[in-house]
Structure formats: C-alpha cells, structure tokens
Length: 203
Image (cartoon, rainbow, N blue to C red; front, side, top):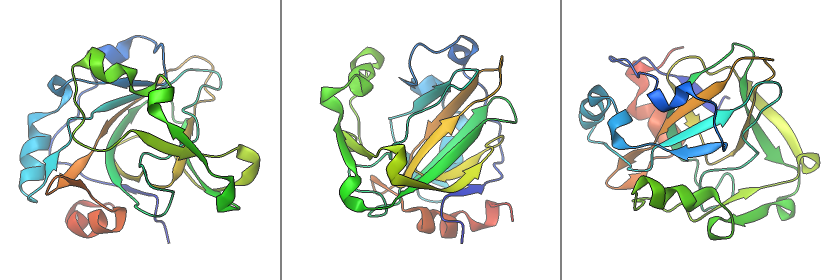
C-alpha cells in the first residue's frame, strides 16, 4: 500500500511564486502568506481545516541537486505521518524519494537551532505555529529506498517518513511550494488526510 504520496485535484490553481524564478541559495526557504492562493484557504475551510503559517519553498539545483534526506516532524519516522500539500515545478526527471531505516538505532536527530534551517523564520517574520525545532535523518547506507514519484501537480505527501529530492536534469531548476494543513491547530496524519480528501484524490 502506498502510504507516501497521492495526487490531489484542487479546484483552483497554485501559481508559482515569483521568488522561484531565481536559483536558490539554499535548499529551503520560508515563503510569506502572499504566496497562499485564496482558493486554498477557502477550500480547506470547507473541510474545517486551516493552514499553518510555516510555508516552505524547497529548491533542488540542476545536475544532481537535492533536498537532503529528512522528515518534517519532531517525532521519529513512522510515529506521526504528518501530511503536507505540495506543488512542484521542474523537469519530469526530478523525483521525491521516500526511505526506511534498516535499524532505528541508526536514526540521527537534527536540532535546528544548531543548524541554519530555521534561521529563515526571523528573516521571513514568522513565529511558527507548529513544532519544527528538530527532525530526523540517517546515513544513506542505513536506508532502503521504498517509494519514488515525479511530483508534477498538487499532491499529498507523507512528510513524517524520511524523504528527499533529486534533480538529474542538466539545466532545469526544481522548486516546491509546501503547505501544512491543520485540524484544530494540529498537523494531520497522512491516512486521515486520505479519508478527509478522498473525493479529491486521483486513483
């Protein structure tokens, strides 16, 4: 069973942010609420959901650029399979990959205060309304690749599991805009999102 990704049909367009026209200087940036389509807010309200103020842009450069292997939760992979709604612009050869650790003792905790990942919050004027002070990763030799998908239209992604991107195209840039839907202020498990949005999912 695919517990990692589902394409979703949205009744509105997600425009590519202007800031995505330039090459990225980092694999992650934080995007202001002006990048949120009004239709997204209204659509989520129809499901009694809201949107986190943590809106992310992920960049994978040409010729082998990637977003490193990580999960997006403060819990270990599989403990809370939080969902995000992503839209990606890039070459058809670029992919998102999901990984499973062979031995949980090999997981590596990353505290973002000790890295540059969360530095962009202050620059973007964001006080996060979800917990994102740490995540997990692992050495690629300790992982098995379990799923891979070209993301070329709106999608639900399981970001509680370890995942990464890879862009092999020699010239084209890959950008992703990532939104976190919330239920009563909390992130939503992937399987719950499948049920909530079942009328909108592609087979």
